[in-house]
Length: 114
Image (cartoon, rainbow, N blue to C red; front, side, top):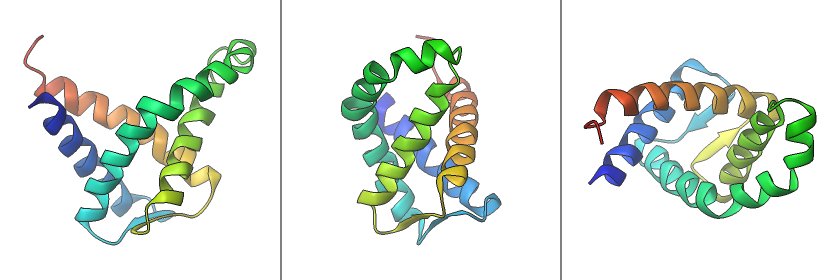
């Protein structure tokens, strides 16, 4: 049940962010739900590999390269999802930063204290 709530929170936040950011678009809320599912799969499979290969750069940049990895994950999701459009790396970076912050706040509000 917690996974479904997290996916819905991510989808809602992503959909609301596309109304604020002109460089990221979904064709509808269904696209945002698909995005949340694909993002979860990419975070599970691809992100650990990118983190491993990017570890030296992450250490050199004191963790800022992790933001680049998050933006790359957003761009990979954009590649796989037809109902999503990201206009470039900068928009993916801004979107990933805001998505991380807002979903963290929203998930902390909906967590049951586990």
